[in-house]
Length: 275
Length: 347
Image 1 (spheres, rainbow over the protein chains, first blue to last red):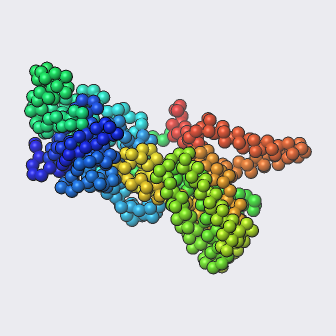
Image 2 (image 1 turned 90 degrees about the horizontal axis):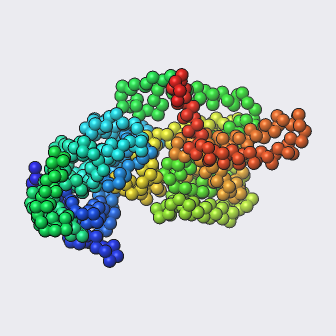
Image 3 (image 1 turned 180 degrees about the vertical axis):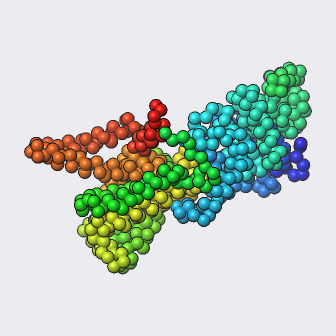
């Protein structure tokens, strides 16, 4: 299902330099509403820099438009409130807190309880917390099948589950665009399949647009509607998964040669492994 | 052995005391606190009041340092702001007692927020040093703004009056200080069931991902400073009514270190930690003194020989906690509870 109408997120001529190193130069691509868009590229291609620029940690040149509105001057919390949620490559959960509290934190920007409400825990504080608990339990915890660990401290969980909790926390942010930084890195095949299923379900059931960075070519090619290939901070190809696979420049970036058949063989093998 | 605690609604699962047993114990504790002053002499009432004041202030520091991760050595100075505000209001204007306490807390909160501004840029030891600066600046103000603070001679505070009764003994003040401490502790516990408290913990654990979740760092840190100082200010106000004189020397830097030690010994980032730590730090020196008193009939030189030893023992206890129970008294309490929950099975 490729998205229709205007793109929900437009990255336009994004350029980011650290001293003399250009991490991104003139990166331009659209993210269609309701699509799953993947950014791929070799290590050091600038994928995480791109994510950090979109979520507001870096201040690049160029523009980022979210639902038609320029957001490049907004601080990260403001972008979060607009509906831009993300997960991190190295899980950024709060290890000492329980799964439930971690997920609840996602809703922070959408709640209004102030300090006085909180101290007395009456009226608004109680009402908001109860609504939140119900919503987290019934829409998120149930959906991601993590009921059994809701009161466990996050630090005690295995890696795959922590990734899932991070996804849960991002969903609690009521995102319009969900940015996933390597959602299946380091996972075994079963965990990867679970995660791919959750990503597809999130798109179907929640109508959330997904933008992800991922190295697992099998998964990228299976579930993406649009693939953007970065190399040395530049977009070298973008389009439908099969078109990108056929692009000789992509093959060169990955394999160091222009031989398309090598890459096709490699990608085909990856895809079979996952399927 | 406790088998399980099944819940029928989210509300009961989110409750502060989530089982009937816990509620019963809390009721017993309140009853014990209510009966306590009738069973002891003025000296123990005095100690109980002092401990309760320290509990309030330590809980405030725990909100800031334990929960938000901002190390502060300014807690005593913020107490001083509350104490002076109360003293000036009471001595000059004679405004009502509880209103003075509230205003003392608010004044301390405002001052605390100002000294919290550096926390956006500096953390850890650096922030601790910048709050020491706050402590010196405030001491200078207390000592030199003579038109308001009467300089080094300090301000004598008339006794608190409530419903026409002069609260001039520890026994009478107990009925204000302890209920207030209980209320403020419940407030702090409530805080960490809501978004406000969760944001504090998020800032402590990972400030970068907190920002991505939509938590504004500066605002959250300043809120934490304000709340913490509010607690300090109310504690300072009670201190002023309790000792009835406020001087610049009443709130030395050493007292800030006392509170930091209290939350470390008690357990950082837990409500119980602030209570246990402050009570421990207030009462243990007294208990050691009492121990010396018990021995002295049999050993006449006990007081002479043991008094210096007492300080050493107290210090050794603190070091012992840091080494053997870094999670503090709270962790010991939890382990004890777990033992009884699992009994007769081995933990």
